[in-house]
Image (cartoon, rainbow, N blue to C red; front, top):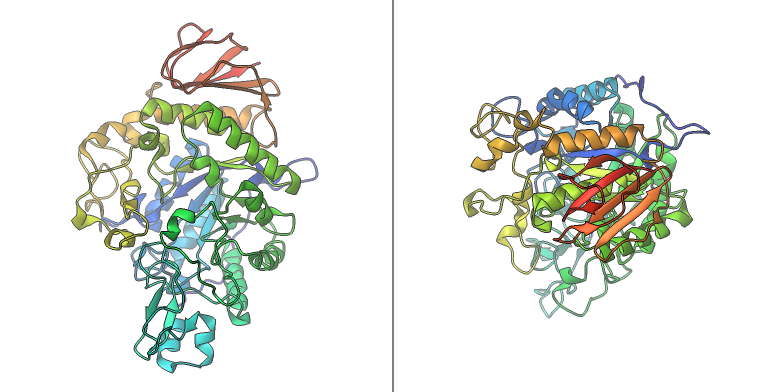
Length: 534
């Protein structure tokens, strides 16, 4: 049942943009909380909203500007909450709407903003609209709010087209009356038909519901997927997941999505407090991503091109230039991200903690906004040896789609203690934590100047206080040896050695911060980033 609260939150203590200061989102460091894995307040082994509220002071001390909360809506949890049954209610495993209200209010009291994850491409098969559409049968009005079609073949036993689910298998499921419905993800996640005005009206209402509650913005899941090509044409080939993010697809990045986001921007602009929209948009190029960020559309988009770039100076420089060049014409900030709840943690992707620490300093030195995934500041690696029996990623049991191993980056983070669950809660954790995480907990790293946590804290303090860091749309590249990145921003310089050998490089100023031990300032160690004044 949809839950209700009457009172509206305030923005006391939160800075707003003026004619002389940029919008907060142009330079914000935004911390992603995956609710089920952040902090458990009631000992059921699952993180919750009260756990998040209790840990907000930690995030304030860390030095971030905003917190993005992955879904906490009422959901059967077929895809960890990205299958929403009620967009105005909280799933009991996470708490209640009063708990959500408390998180928002306390965050605002600490000077933190809250970004809510919105899932508009699809809902749960337990959503009232979909359940009623199944009951009412073919040709009824509610079926028009989804993509129901008759099948192909003499008896309609073949799917309506050749589209494949991102999670593997066909993107269509047949129901008892013979029709098929489209689900680009799991069968429990039917896609909405965004050409239907009732769908558009409903989501504008959902936006207002959370904005009235005090949400500072929305991270828009599958922002590129809402509109499908007319007629739902065949793609004409298999292994379609391999095309994601590099080719035009009839079910992703269609131009019709932009009118939807223009209407959403009008809603956001009705509210005080600089509310924003952030697109999760997998597109073939940075230029296509920029289209989502024109002045009358959204404010930010995730930079997946940067996330997918390897630990290589030439490739990183090319991606940085491409990203900044694409965003500049639309006046949008570039975002930088290394990890999230859907990808292997970058410590493991890059192959070492040293590289992960250097990558963190590089990301935080770049102009624009940066995203930090929970546990990244602790240097957590991917958990690669989870037993099959505990995995909950829906793609794990389906073939030909994603690898189904996303649970490895979702293991609950360690807070304190020498044994699992390391302060996560009193009742264990929904995924097992490795024994070696005892030394990576918040408590173990706090106060240790060599720890990754203290590195992030120091970097975020400097980023906030240094006049040359934060918002911007360009870097000045400096001459550097092969395998090394060197750029200047005003009175600030960043150097990064992506090779496995020390490199001689004249010191460009006074050392502010280094990702690893630094002896001779004119010798840049392997896999190390250094911030300089000058």
